Image (cartoon, rainbow, N blue to C red):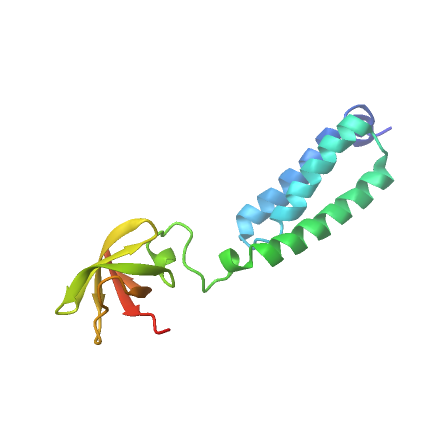
Length: 153
């Protein structure tokens, strides 16, 4: 009996952990976003294999099913976050683009104050200037100043 077979027979968690680590290492090296889900699936199968010991055939089938399901669900529900055109997750200011807010102070010479995402922000707007209490949408960010335009109903 080979070393891997012996290890698998006594502790099936470790070979599955090695598979998870391999997928994760390749994912980190390539940054594709596709191999994170097989890595997570291999880890879950390893935990189940250690607890239930269902056998290699069932574990492999479970790994395949979990990989397909997790990849599909991640692509479906995380798509806006994973899109290359979406703002960087680490840049909270860029995530304000598209958010709606209220005008808090009258705009004078294109400058005013708006309430967006629970905070009071300095803002700039082109003509026509938004009126007090009018709803605006954030169209851009310049430093700590939001670029806004009135929402037309």
